[in-house]
Amino acid sequence: MYGAIPLADVQHEDAGLSHVLRGPGPYLVAAFGRPFSAASARILDALTAAETSCGINSSAPIYLKGGHAPARVLRQRLAAELSRRDRPVDSDVEWSTLLRVAASVPALAVVLHDAHLIAEADRRFVRDLAQAWRSTLSEGGVPRWVLVSDDRRFLADVFGTDSPFHDPLAALTDRGAETAQAAELGALTYESLARACPEWSAQDVIRGYAIFGGLPEVLGMLQSKRSLASNVSRVLLGPSGPLLDALPAAISARFQKTARYGALLSALASGAETWQEVAGAEPEFGSGSALGAYMKRLQERGLVDVHDSLDAPAGARRKRYSLSDPFHAFWFRFVAPLADRIGAGQMQPMDAWNRHIAPGLDPYVSSQLPRMARQYLERRGADRLGSGARVVGGLWGAGYDFDPAATLNDGSVVYAHCTWQASRVGEEALLRARAEVRETRYGFGRERRAIMLFMKQPPTPDLEHMTLRDPNVEWIDAERLVAGARESPHLARSSESAR
Image 1 (cartoon, rainbow, N blue to C red):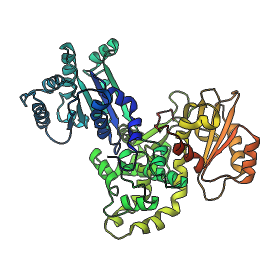
Image 2 (cartoon, rainbow, N blue to C red; image 1 turned 135 degrees about the vertical axis):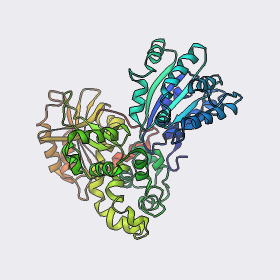
Image 3 (cartoon, rainbow, N blue to C red; image 1 turned 45 degrees about the vertical axis):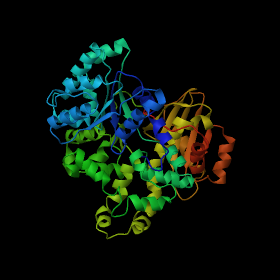
């Protein structure tokens, strides 16, 4: 299902959630998955593996996808699925009755994909779901229900204090026997791509992750035996490339006023980070409140992340914004300006790559390298620093800008700079980092304050000599960044550390 990406990596990514799904229940899981995260596929993988991994004689899970169909049609589909499992039921009954019947089938899971659309089609849906949960538990039934959505606002509403689920979920938590949880199906790290494409050079792995990101549905389209340029040409830059129009189609399906959302996403892909920079992308966003509504919706749908500096006080406004996955950034920065000509057959894939993408690729990869550096510190920082990271994020203010920075489990603080350039990084990079460390109070007084320099290739001899003399300075080039992922059986998972 996931093409070049080893299935083990995807399964490990979802290990905690899989443990719940493969259990006997009862459970209610509200799972968030970004576009192209293959969320429902990953849920179904876990459920269909339940019989072999846990000895549960599970019926095949029922999968119901929300859409533009009327609520009555959706209920009829669920009734038909139950009839096929020897539980005939009138298709005109409420959701609560249908779900109670489903809970009477031993070890049957019901997966409701795009659950927010089901709720939009039937305003009684969440109320009926809560009623069915309460009734089923009181009757000794075992509900195993999964709501999948790419709308965080809907999933928050399910568990919110104003939700009809609030009281039964509070009781559920007190009893401790059942499981109710919100889960996020995150992206894979660059380590998964490194293992999936062992013939790629380390630098191509870093470039490839900056282009394709970590969403399994995207990575699953790659062919490990092909070169990076060939994969980009095949899936992104050809008239029939499966990813050429996939992102605008996903945005159109989720938002109205797509041109405004597209302008914001393009601005972020081009390097805008602050509120003022993003607002300048669209003249109509003169009002902060107008921009706020759009940005909030992009965050709720998993396309934009908001970050606070590690030293920011509560409520600080010096936030930064970024696209949630490198694939989104690459598409809007490089593919969007060419998409019409590519689709019309007016530009050949390799011409697009050689003339319009490759020349500007290094600065773009440099903008995405901090994401991979954060993953490295989260996963493998102990290899170089002797202690794992407790918190990883960005650190910026007057006179300093580190992305990432980290506090380690032993109390040490790490400050990192990332550079992806054709020439070798020299001693001036270390001198600049040391000067910036002196400008921040974050980590002041700690016994150890280390500097890490992430780069494309090994540094100049002068810089390497300086690092050899100072045990609190490390450099990590592409080879070092990727080598650990290929050598170790340890599987990668993107953490939700503070940014």
